[in-house]
Amino acid sequence: MEKQANHVSTVWTRSVSGTGLEVDIRIGDVEAILLHVVRRYHYEVERLPRVDLAGRQRIDGLKKDEPESNLASGTAVRIRPGAGASGSLFPLQVLTVRDILADCGGVVRWGGDDDPVDESLFSIDRGPDDASVRELADRLRLAEVTPGEGAGVTVDVLAPSRRDRAKRLVKEQRAS
Image (cartoon, rainbow, N blue to C red; front, side, top):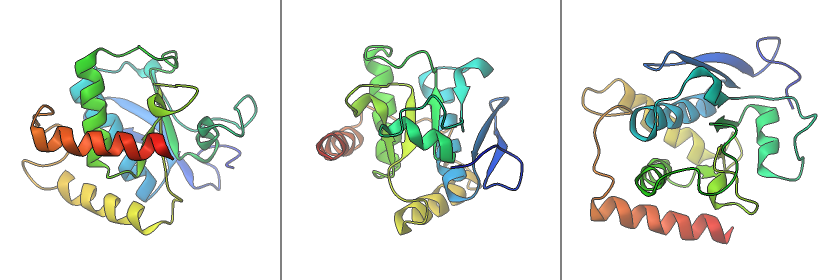
């Protein structure tokens, strides 16, 4: 657990490119992944004002046995923090969130699939040193600097291959 951001810590305040937003987040691979999730959400699901993004939080007040405890280590973000309950997104927004998760290959978990449901929570679903975290972060970093790839590029979330991939991931993550 990180006691505070920006002070002898692995959690620092980072800008979310192209959004005007900042978030306290674990630096390195986790940063690359969660910033990608936030950017795609901002571009494709709903434009986010500053008050609708939260990163690292003190462990006090968090449920230590729930996925939200990942906020204490900077390995999770809350998007639209008041939207913890189910049903806060329209169907096309849910499809887009599922596409974002599928792009992350199971490395990112959405609180919308947890019990209790928390549609605002996105967290790293592996240890931060897991090889799949590094591989995804490297892929996202490469896409970010490659024209025509990365967050902000129009994708067809209704394409059958993308929908199938997203549906498989839902089953896997709900089962775990």
